[in-house]
Image (cartoon, rainbow, N blue to C red; front, top):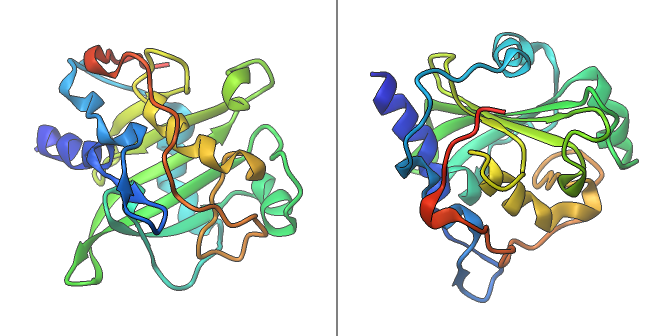
Length: 204
């Protein structure tokens, strides 16, 4: 069961997205899940988020179909630290910011079974300067951590940072279909991720 849940959450890494002129490759197209993972991944902030995010500020009432999150329907939630920046468009987000993207499987064009929870956490300055100190995590529907890490080379979540780099103007947050004040970003070709052919998992 765990292996099936992990496989489902890893499907996000296999997608192609376009910019309106046709599909183009991006870092998520190469599957890092093919590599051997650690027996258990832990992430205290992500695991706590999975338990409490429903009490946070929800920034889209209607589901948004997200090609880069497994072609699933998603709803985005902001914790208190994220609200002022996200809703006013004042970037960068402060450290302690957490954004949770709740996903549902696409069943006939409507939200179906619950999918993974995608999390972005802004850590203290110096955590990952090249990617503005964002930490990424993916939580399976059963609450177990599928992936957790930075955007650094060799991290299991390097592909997340590769995709979000396109939204650097919004401090790496797209915000499509939400009430967040962001600069609209066309999804096009993002920088290629080095070393994806022999991707290795790094918990942190």
